[in-house]
Length: 520
Image 1 (cartoon, rainbow, N blue to C red):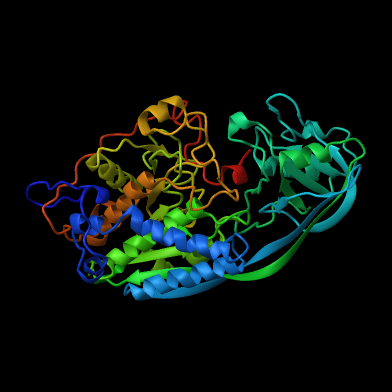
Image 2: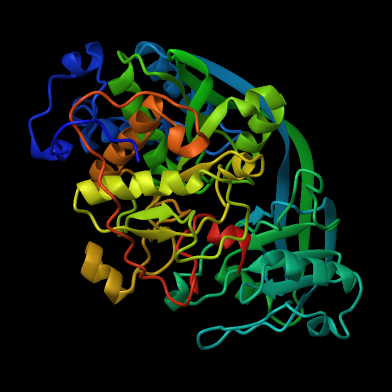
């Protein structure tokens, strides 16, 4: 841990003391923990959240990639960066978007709400719908489509109807294609005890840059109600997926330091899902960075600080993956570390930190050397604030994936998505046991009313604390010597996570962002 000499100085919550006037925060060099954190607040973050809500309201209720709402969000971030004295670079990238159809023809006629699967193939098929080992009663627990044997006797050319449950979506889709299905419809489970699994799902079939299409047939996700309708005897439907090339944008902001070849990066995805304005997911992370941008505008850090607002995260981490791929090896080598902030204000929150040391969750991805130091830095912040915290799986399921795949140390924060809060977690963080951390996850109700001010207040300070720590020295991460953060403050040892998630080394995935899109 980076520690300055001298006696420790209390690091107070921004809400517990009178903050300086905005003009003072904007003009002075906020180069100590106390000065920077008193200028970062839930009120400052909320100002940006309200701007994102207004953008969504003016653009059909969404800020999803490839929409006017997303472009307006890009423009807003650029405006804040430039007003705050940061550079602003709008970087284009291209990807294949999908135009989709899910139309039931018999025994009833209905255009069902749906979403194209990431990793789907193209096609336009009209055929009989054949349910595959689905369960429409009780808890609706099922293994639909998880085994090749589920498709015994499946009529070639039919559309396979499979239900969310037990195994990854990719397994269900691949098994269906191998059984001769012409298309696949994956519908939600319909089990409230598992995180309100009723709405439209947006399946991800685990594509890679090398294999962006996992199957060659069209695959869409839909709601439990649509699945019930499609499971009726005599059901026929049209399922269509058509690709088209889209250009969208990442926004990169930079504050030059004394050192320009040891870059501290932090990022958040800027896009919402099509269903809503995405104020917690991920207006919260995006706005937390913007509040730090404004507070650091007059600063002169030792290391160069670079922030990113990523596009097309919700459809497969496309913006961040494209940006990293666009960098030369020399440019990637200059990145000391990457901090990811994806959902930091969940209404029924817990305080989660990516578990780089795997004390709660076995990581299914590489954990670059130096990532543990990032986890410890964030743990030390919560320790200073006397806030209990817990591990969140280092899963690679957000925009840090491209960075860790290139050996760049990474870490971040998370306050929970659709996983249900336990009574133990309620006792620690408050809120409501038996309800999701975010009941509006990926839904239209993820509005300005869907954030917790206490979580925003604490976590915006956590963002600022980590950024300032590494803006002065990344020695603990990559061995590059820097300088102590000015001021008389000693960073304490972490108190340790609460370990509230079930099972030895990760029975239930605490970092569940995009859970419904990745595995069932």
